[in-house]
Length: 92
Image (spheres, rainbow, N blue to C red):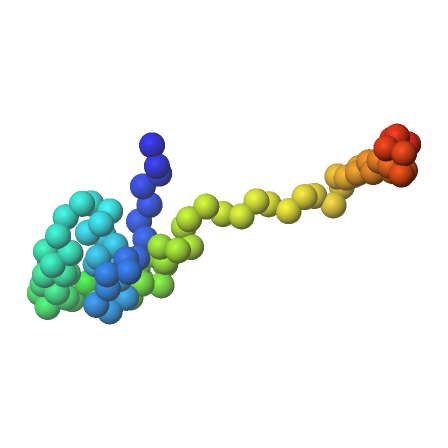
């Protein structure tokens, strides 16, 4: 099962925070936007929370498979090369 992560959405009006929250919980983005707007107008804390989440939440493309970590400098990499002459015989 794929790990579910809270990220910004590409379906965005301002920063993609409301759409990202809606995708995470599987609800309509418009409902999240309305609740967020009400929290800004009535309680006043919604704007600060939105700005904070816009800064903290990763973009969706940054949460895909991470590249493999580079090898440690302490590891020794050994490569053997076989030399083949014109006769088709392998020499070492």
